[in-house]
Length: 464
Image (cartoon, rainbow, N blue to C red; front, side):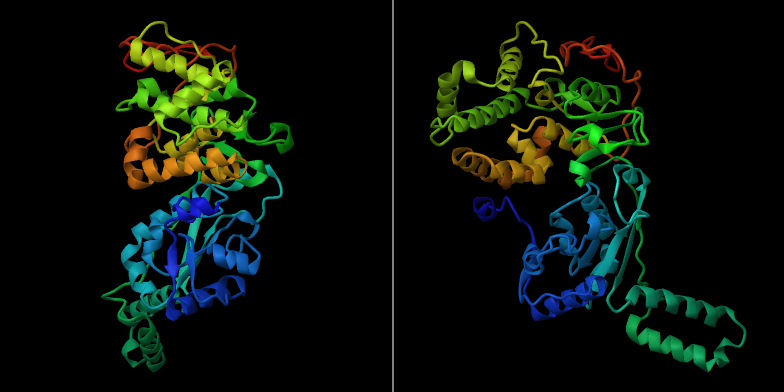
């Protein structure tokens, strides 16, 4: 993992905390939230204020996230909005914190100039003893204030000012006036510079959680379902009709298509399908060659082609399926009919442009783990777990590739792979019930009247 850290691929973009003043503010907030302090004089923090160095010091990587829900946070600077979220237990947590900071940027800039802002992502669930409890999480409320309670006291001062303006004889109320003066000395002039935080409530409809071995919960779609990373039988009874696990490839394929959540890469607007497919194939060759101890040299295109030739029939089915698709893209000919049972199937899709695009790409990354670039971008925790078990040659190639090709232009790479950032409106989702026979996907993408043939039968694209 040291290689990833050195290349900025792990713990990258963390915010340094080095001055005694900031360390002091952090400790006051940490004491208020957890009753503990750090003895470190410098460390780094993520968007939530979590520090891996302090986690090591305390022997508790969840010191700001007890029970893995109702995550607490410490803000020392609004620059934290661009930092990653480490040890995430819910896929929505970073997005909520980012929006909260962005929509309260002016107020938080003022507050953090003199104190730390501490708070919590509150929901009505305080423990997750059973998977069914996840369905009780619907809304996340951000509760925040400085360690000196500036927001609460500003609200209190605002109430006193209103009393002073509206109550008869308030001019003669010495106690009221004295209290206003005392509070104003702490909060400043709230009539000219109000200290209030907005946008503090966020819906949590569709999300991923690390709890119970990993679970994707899609409730706000036309055909809801839960998708478990581990065996679905271990989850027990859930208050949702459809529950799948990673072995239910046909059902997951059907779920994604009838909810209009994915699109074939070869049919995606603006995508260089050939380049994307070829890179996926390179990653598969590297994994296969490294696993067999074959030399891939520096991982150049020529060396990888040689490795693929050496592997021959030992190349994985994922490679063979993508190679057939690449031949169709580049030279035409017979369209490869790849069923949802084929190992290459989920490698051929990306999420459509909708509000849950990142969540769907995260699920696709889990279903196509040999595409290490998508795995790194969309599901870092799974990437790090996989990286630990790779042969050294594969580790070196992937780390060098990500540093060279992804780190220098993250936004451009994401747009090339997944398209421009979508708006936050949900997809137009219509489709049949998720029962029916298996079939062939993704279908022929060419021509205005092209059909997608799925495990539920033929479905025409809109406008065709």
